[in-house]
Amino acid sequence: MYPLFASCADDGQIHVYHGMVYDDLTKNALIVPLKILRGHQRVDGYGILDIAFYPGQPWLFSAGADSTIRLWV
Image (cartoon, rainbow, N blue to C red; front, side, top):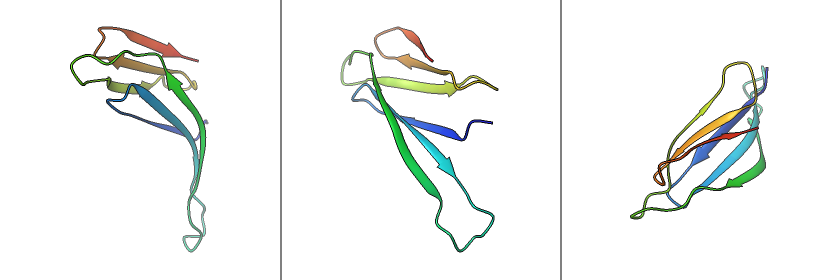
């Protein structure tokens, strides 16, 4: 599938990464930053409250403190 993962924070940004773990456990995992997504406004010091990938697609949903849900494709 799509070996993507993401993190979000109260600064209103989402960081999306590509990750790969090797069968050889002596090799370090590969983590490559891909994109920084911005779009949510901060409200009372809070930015993004939650993120989730859509199963089977590289679509990312985010829920912000600004009372919006965004779909990132």
